[in-house]
Image (cartoon, rainbow, N blue to C red):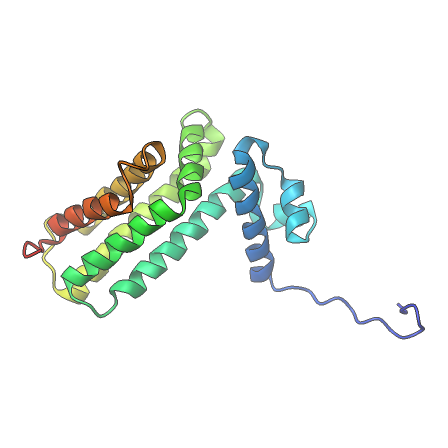
Length: 210
């Protein structure tokens, strides 16, 4: 194919699949945040990302799966950030760092909490949504339990409950605090959320010297 002045046009480079997914997820996060699940449109997401609607389907399967992927990506990013924060520190510092990180996200990224709440509510009424939502939440609870076990092994902390149960407790506590912050952000500000998280983490890790 020739360009307007008679030269040969460079062939378009195919983007790596990871980059395609990254762009679609970024566009989807913006669309879901702005419009909510019901009113978000896949064609608008595709256009914002610079791809066809078919690219969205080929990478994520559909609207439900894409919505879950947006929430999963944010949860994974937070998980990795917490891991970096607590790497190589004692249990007291690890509790403080993890509580601060999660509280900062709850107060600083209320859109994620709102999206998660919307998806959870929809899952109670829609079996197809629940089929996507339940495995996502299960994986998040398991990841929380694995993180607790890893911190305990690193610091020598004596957990007061099984790591898997600690993961469930922290996962549910985090979601509950996120919902309460959305409903009453003045009463449940970042500092209050951080204290609540730190108090429970202290009990779970046996760090009674705090």
